[in-house]
Amino acid sequence: MPHSSQTATVVDIRAEREAIERELEALLTASIDGDCGAAQEAMRFAVLGGGKRIRPVLSLRVAAMLNNRTPMAVRAAAAVELFHCASLIVDDLPAMDNEMERRGQPAVHVRFGEANAILAAFGLVALAARSVLELSTPQGALPQLVQFQKRLLRTLDCAGLIAGQARDLSLSGEESLCTRAAVNEMKTVPLFELAAEAGMLGAELNGEERQRVRLFGREFGRAFQLIDDLLDGDLEHRQPFLRHLDAARDLAGGFGDRSLPVFEILEFLHAYAAQTNPRHR
Image (cartoon, rainbow, N blue to C red):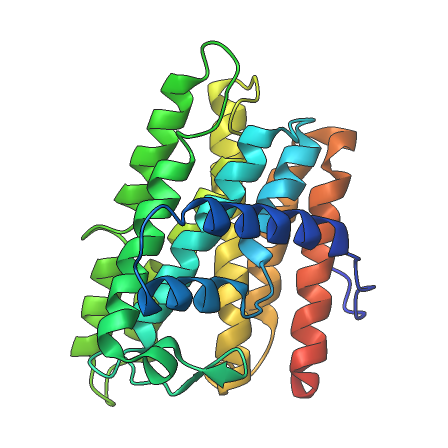
């Protein structure tokens, strides 16, 4: 289905963002069972200091499509966001991308020091991994949660985010845009796949439907990454972005009339790309 060339209407995602903020606040508050000092403050600063929350919002939109908006899906969505925030702390470190700001505020290592930033990143990964198993769940749901926890941790390993960051560090200025795009995909797309999987956690789906949701998350993640490429001037036109957006739309369309919540988040992404980069409308 071709995507309209008109700027999409901005979709209201405040309800999902508020639900995620409440869950993140609850998780960070409940995690205070020791005295980590500044490292614990750094964890809260990294997570509660703003952000679009697009990954967990995507989780909740997938859950809504599947009539699966359960505490388990909300918790899994929040775990994805904790994981994402941990990855941003690491990306910003002087030994990595050496960024001084994040989300309009000082980077965590600037505000709290490198040591506390590293500890905060470890703390958020641990909190994300254990939080999905520390929730009262329906009978028989524990194996699904364990599998999701394994997927969460596998996203970090040498086939995922670590590999992407390692290759990013090795790139030189002369590396091709194709190589850089592959690195960006390794750093960005896995968390969107995971977010889509969080939304179907606990839903009764067949194998084909589960694969469709995973592929939808992948195409959404690719489209999201291309927004950064547009902003950075690495793309001269919007066709690659729209192509992945259309692919995600086609995959979601397999769920028929239930797809509306997901179609809306695709429209949100389309509008976001146009509004943040008017040159490429």
